[in-house]
Image (cartoon, rainbow, N blue to C red):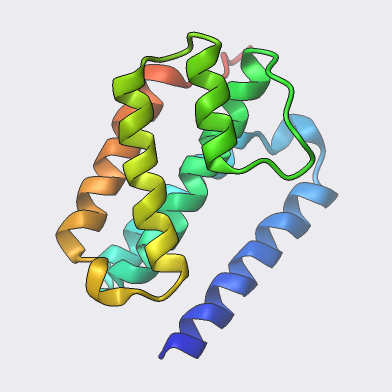
Length: 147
């Protein structure tokens, strides 16, 4: 089963990378990807595959933090980590230490799912993770305004 999940996640990441590279920047925003990742994570939750959902929810978190860093003109390395982005966003005053701690807990659960530590990734913890990411997104990520 682990191999199937790993292959599925690799295929999803490949698909997301391919679509963002071939589509114009205006039509593929990080906000769209974040929502897509969360929608896909919810689909996996509905299928009873909360481990896969945790991986996709973590991808949504990473995507959302990248968007926030761009919105606040925070310089990032070529391959930023969630830890780096989280620290820089707190340092820039985008959110406080309490939120930083919450993001760190979400990152930890994401890493456990990525590493296959299934006994530490419960269905309820993934549901909570997804709810926290949605709440974070509602508070901190501005949606694009339609023209």
